[in-house]
Amino acid sequence: MRPVRFVALGDSLTEGVGDPLAEGGWRGWAALLAGGLADTSAGESVAFTNLAVSGAQTRDVLERQLPAGLALRPDLVSVVVGVNDTLRCTFDIHAVAARLDAVYGAFTRQGAVLLTACLPDPGAMLGLPGALARPLARRQRAVNAVVHALSDRHGAVHLHAAEGAWLTDRAMWSADRLHPGERGHRQLALRFHARLAEAGLATGTAPAPEPEFPVPTRSASLWWLATAGTGWVARRCTDLLPQLLTLAADELRHRARGTSARLDLRATAAVSAALAALSVAERQPDAA
Image (cartoon, rainbow, N blue to C red):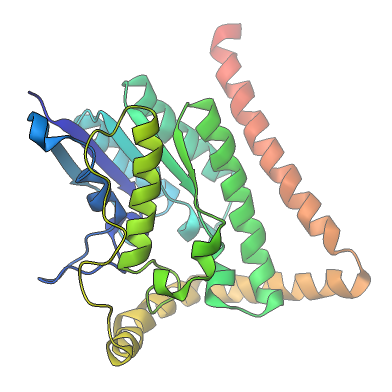
């Protein structure tokens, strides 16, 4: 019996950051989900490949991960990405939409079942001050709106992970407040498994909700933040911080004038234009 081929694409969330293995490295929600896709007692099995890389943006998924993923001809593929795009000065919702549409379409045309998710706002998770957090929140809402629309267009199994009690439950999150801990990764795997089981696409046992490994001590968490965590923040701040300060200044100016709503309307209009452009591009070959 041929194994179910499951391929995961994305960034550090799917790579598994925050869910450490006892022998080192990361496991993550996708690996946990893979373990529950097939009924091993019936002779079923899963061939799982994780192509996700920490720091990946939609461009990286399109240009690097997509070709490798297509070559594996997956039965099931997860594409969860977008937060890193919001943390860059090059953020462009039109480009994000076009890349995601291309990736989703390539896999669905090949016959794969597509898994997608909307994601939490990084500014809120980090507890940034309002003027700094609001521009990031606006960007993440834009990405989520695009993911929602394209997931529907491509018939994806979509998970609403941008809201819910799990966001404010500290037990779900790692020390950096951006990545889930083991319990949080298990929550994501469980929710995806439930959606797939409802559709008859997961026949194995659902992942256990409780952690397998001890929760890191406070000292271990602080050490991680002082080493790897500090490096993560430094790499992103070099690129994002100058623009984020500009965005914050613009935010404060609009707030002082009472015109903050214009920023939200501008972001909503950009999402609509990005999706409309994809629809036009999709119709053009037929028109020719």
